[in-house]
Image 1: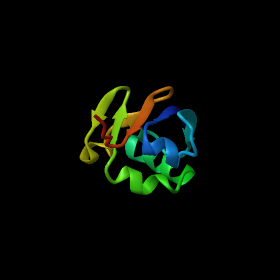
Image 2: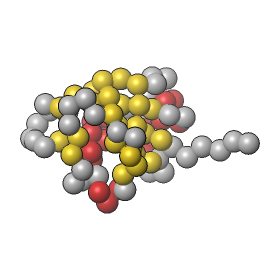
Image 3: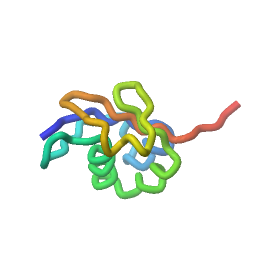
Image 4: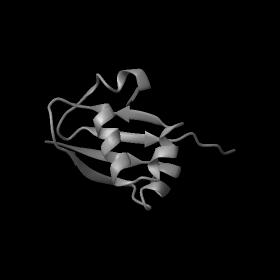
Length: 89
């Protein structure tokens, strides 16, 4: 099992029922990938799925490409951030 910190920004925070961050766990086969961590977030918050279609995902403050998520390993106490596009002025 891997325990990671999830951070939610902008509309991701709304989809996470107003939570800014939380600790989640991924059980099952090792190693745990970033894709599996994101699936854990989607399973916890089904409204997160449309947010993730345009959001960036970062692991320990480093952005990850969608293509690399299946091969990027998440370790205990890592941080996964969901960062949707934002606008402002």
